[in-house]
Length: 195
Image (cartoon, rainbow, N blue to C red; front, side, top):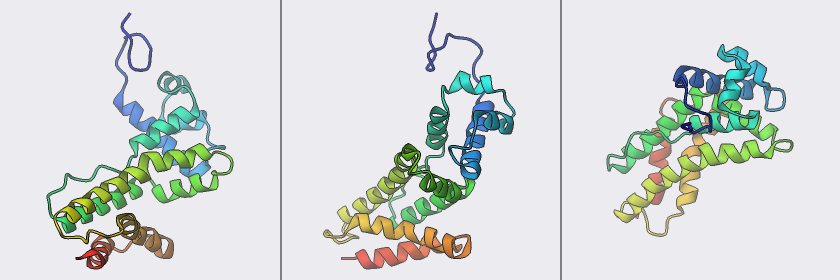
């Protein structure tokens, strides 16, 4: 019998719409209920599927959350165009849109609140969302450095933090980032990094 990637025999193809509904429900419940209080029964009800449908796809709640966070990975910005300012702004705008789409601030808060009891959630958040986005921004800054637009001795990790920080600061201060936060963050960082 032919094996699928989940190790089950061949059969009717899985529904992508059901997968998406389950993953979206898992993220929403993680943000609103927390990891410990969230149940697979709640996910099934929110997604409009049976609990067995979830178990056909993911063995445990941790497996499901791993898949949900992987699906929400914040590294889908448009391909670089070669203009450092435009490319950095595009990545930051995509980051903000993704955070808003998956209620990312509540998700971050939940993962931080659960850190003492379920440290793998915060580790997974870093692995699946934070580090890929930081790597993307750093790569753009490295290209700019190689092209001579950024000082050779620039602290690129610090610059990445400075690019992302205004979004979080604005959100905490006002409940949302200013509309032009990405442009301002990029302009400030590039001004500090110029040769």
